[in-house]
Length: 633
Image 1 (tube, rainbow, N blue to C red):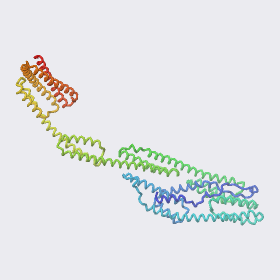
Image 2 (spheres, rainbow, N blue to C red; image 1 turned 180 degrees about the horizontal axis):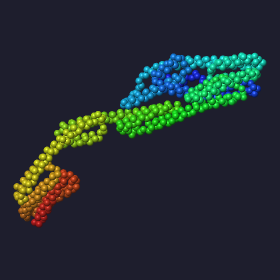
Image 3 (cartoon, rainbow, N blue to C red; image 1 turned 60 degrees about the vertical axis):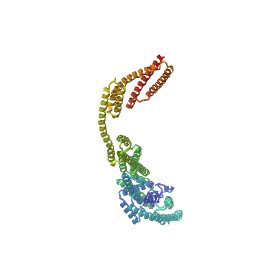
């Protein structure tokens, strides 16, 4: 709250000087004592129009608000300055309306400035209003008005108290005259003068106004009852009062032609003041005369009441419309907004709702300020949440940018590796990691992506180049291996073991050293290679086995007759045979652990199968040798 707003709120507590109709006299038009039965004069009491004085005050506020809400801040300042220079200390309602109108302008300016400040991406907490020289001038003028009005109020209170003392002194003298029955006729002129003196003294202390007026009525009635004034004098007084009151009735009826119900109502208040100041009329027409005046007043009062009921209905409609706007903003689910576009779309909606708010008029005085505070808080909450989201997103984008820059640097550093395959594998991992990182600021999105793809493409291009070279080498290796297979196939299967077998080993070593061949031809080529080798080994192993068996038969012939040597040889063969069986069982058990789905697994399984085959041949050969020893015992 600004200093002016604090000062303005203090102004609401100033006691108004204007008495207006709130301090009016009682309202029983024909309250008379029993003296009327004797034909004596009865003093009429005040009009019932004063019972709605608060409505009249509200009318003035509405008129002031309409007048001053159309002014600029400078015009409001100048108007307050003119009031101060004129010394019109009774214009406190106008000053209050000037303050309220100025505050409304400042509130709108601050709200628009805050909205612009937030829309620019700033934190609402950092916002501060710019200094306003016009506001400072208005505040100084208001302070001076407040000081002068305080002095004015004190003087007015003193004046009213003095007026009350004077009226009470007059009433005391009138009571003395009315009570002196013996000399009441001789005091007629003085009593009349006292009545004029009493009426010439205007407003008194509000709390005593009604009681003083009642005392005045009672003493006048009592005086006329005692006076027994002659009928001619009473008739003359009644006739004069009748003419005056009929003139007021005509003026009241003319007020129906005024289009402004507030102006007509205020004019009627003045007529009621005059009616109260006029003396009584003849008793037989008194009630009818009052009914005529009241009927004319009722039409004006009804128009005035209808006006305020319509205004109340409009205020109720505005209150409902503004409440709906508040609820619409409060119903927005901020947590569902995941992107800038979501927030921007919501911002446009909020701005549209703010425009609608300005299109609606005032709600009721009780609800208007509360609704405005509620609406402003809902708007502030939205823009604060939007600012927080934009800041979080900005931080996240910057964090993602740092991560992607780091990936670019890693990818570029891999150029130093000689192992292209290893580097390419690392690049693939970096690409997967890149995909897991979110977005980066739009202004650098293309450049950082171009940097990363350039670094990655370097390795993929290099791998393509190496792949072409490797394919050329594999085709050369294929030709080498096919040449080796042709040489192996050309070897005789019935040649000398010691001559052919070293050549087989030499060609197999050349096969192993020949390098890789195209992957799709590897298995087929290896199958052909193994088939050739297996045929050679099978042919020469059988031949060698026959040679070994023939050699063993010669050894058995040499051992005949020596039972001990025969027995030791048999035991040796049995141990070797059992060892070979144990080895066979171990290999067969291990066969279940190989992954035959891989190429390496297939190759090893085939090797193990060949080994099992050789072991079984060895076992068979050992069993034949043992059987030969047993047959020679």
